[in-house]
Image 1 (cartoon, rainbow, N blue to C red):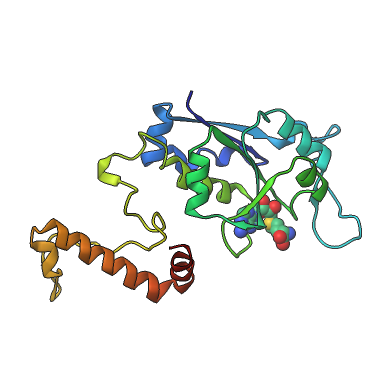
Image 2 (cartoon, rainbow, N blue to C red):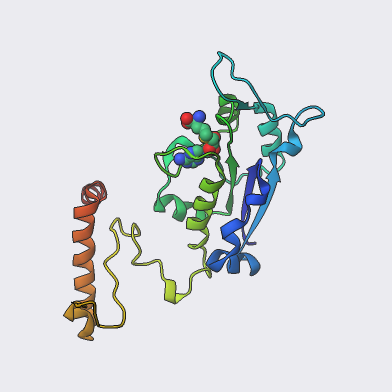
Length: 229
Ligand code: SAM
């Protein structure tokens, strides 16, 4: 059975969006993965299908009702990881993408307004995941980011030409620099070793370049890697 993503959102037309293109789109067409989108408004209350209400304790903004979100979750819940995209969550990493890709799929809840009533997050034991330290208007772009990073890791999505092996973060390092033709451009040449045809020397140069760039740009990644090795 293919890998399954379910997205709960108030803006179903935002999907598949960019995931209908390129690698993810081709894999979707080939049924390597599937995507179903649930409109949370279908579970809204009353004639106007209300999904939100004012916050207890006062303050600006609206909060998504727990009963409405819970009913929407119940319509798709089947044991797959349940994720609420929120800036308050743990920061999404490549390791998360690898973990999700190794499973059967996931269910993603996209918030709007001030977000979800805390009780439904707790009652459904949602994993809270953030895509970065900034506030988006809604969880949809975050869900697209999480899915894009995950789907490309599914078997059969990337060909040998797009191998994930050396990519940034796959071994706790940023990737080495890339060069292509022309060998001379704008007065700049390509490092000699890359033209040498010596595969071992190329591999050693790339590994050293990865280490240097990680140390310089991301001392946090470097420190985490050193402490694990
Ligand atoms: N009041 C919330 C706060 O300050 O933490 C922000 C709510 S935001 C305007 C609306 C929704 O966008 C959130 O419920 C969440 O689903 C989504 N969102 C915003 N920033 C995000 C981020 N960095 N990562 C994941 N989801 C995010």
